[in-house]
Image (cartoon, rainbow, N blue to C red; front, top):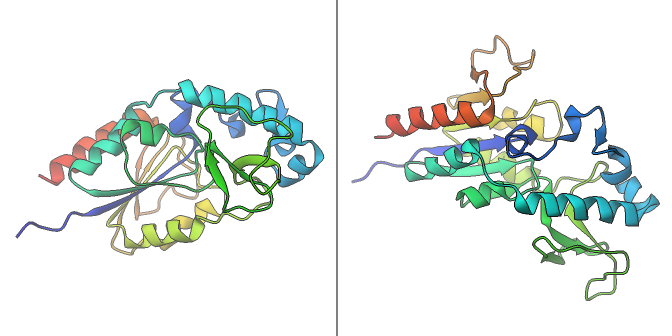
Length: 235
């Protein structure tokens, strides 16, 4: 009888995508390529200037379409050879999927998707195409990015908490663990779960926590090392 594969839950943040050249707004003083974050990434910003928000996400979608996965993304995908792996990402690009990860839950939506502005169940994959003011869904409402903005609920936080609660191993990479509700996911980890944090900057709230094994490196380098270790343990 073959032994049960251990379950790994991975939580990734902007630092993972940054190594593929995708900018993170928290590292730029609240400005994202010259845009005030609340103007382009909040529900209030959408109501104030829909055209500006659409232009901004058209630009981000085009940028993300040409980005390539880095060592960190490939390391997460490689773990599927020996483990059950669920990736929970705060990132809106599809770099995890490009690298080969097969089970990816996007907490904050996907850049390549748009949805009806009145019916959140009407979602369309537009790949790298642009949407403009006046582009409407079949119900006649304006299409908007399928992104969770500041001021909106995070629908996938409940399924994410369930994934974390079942994991034997939890890996956190490229996130500062200060943005809620995502930061609260760690509280759902089992008492006996192994927890790893990979980031160049280890938060003060984590230092000295005996439950968390810290790898103070960029996610690409740190994840490659951790994946090699875990794959060896699974042999």
